[in-house]
Figure 1 (cartoon, rainbow, N blue to C red):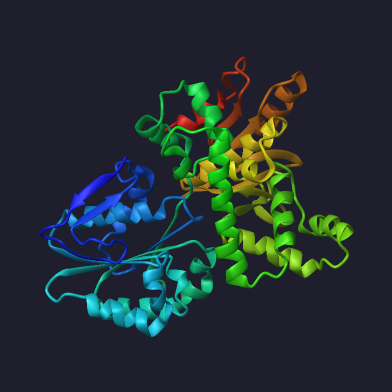
Figure 2 (tube, rainbow, N blue to C red; figure 1 turned 90 degrees about the vertical axis):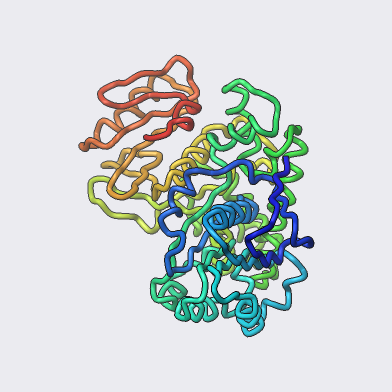
Length: 428
């Protein structure tokens, strides 16, 4: 589905398109309300609005949708620079980048600047800081590298940025995409499709087999590794990077230690150094391919820096890299739930309550939610999973999420629900 916009009263300097009279977007008919709700109050303020997240998660489409909203409110001059395009490669020079923007400003109009993949410009933060100080335009930026939001840059920009992290589609969003672009599915089939191919928008734009989806996901994965890690950091051992990523994929839902990872990789290849393993794992995080969730001590109210789990930014990436492994479904479920909490705006940790494991803890503006993930229940699992939550003495919501159809209901204030039911909830 392609949505077309005619350009008339609004002047646009879209560097992303060949024709100035017709703009086409593949996914613009589908909005993502959760992200609009988080950025709407920032539109038009003097800060730079920064949207980050893994490559191909939908940041560019979201930017176009913001531009449409801004354009609907008056006579606006939009300057759009997309560093995915070869035509803009010369603008990666800081001074040329700044000069180009200044040349595109129109006096007497509301000037709005959109820059896709701004981290491609060396020294971009100096240009943006100057534009903010000059008060010449409303600024929106995207980036596929978490260092874009590092304390170093935030300090350099003197707190003049508002940030929003975007993820691939949630289950609720995939349902909307499926209704728009694919054949109807039952809730159960839609859930399994989501678990099997993940939430990258490109795999939901048409009906396709899992094999076709995995080829698309493999291309996305290779692009991220090459452009956001190998090229950016000058990686010399691509094979080691791939092995670290596959190690993380194989251990979803398990406590992971970089030191243990190093010991295993070093045993396979004695030339592997500890510092390289730590660096490469950090690069996977900085590209948003993986997330590290530290352990939170519920009783002691503190984080353990050396205890953590890794999760993927999209579960489909694991299947693209290793093939679909049904027996790994408990880890797949936990990864899906981790991403769902993040998509809802929660900071997410794994939990420890007096030695009892809590799979996921989400916190957002003082609101907290506890989540246990159980694929199928045994008698011992029922007692263990519920007891782990019963021992938490607070009134925040507590969930046991399962794919066991025989376990549903509310026990001692703990909600036991299906995975599809949890993912479809508007509020937790």
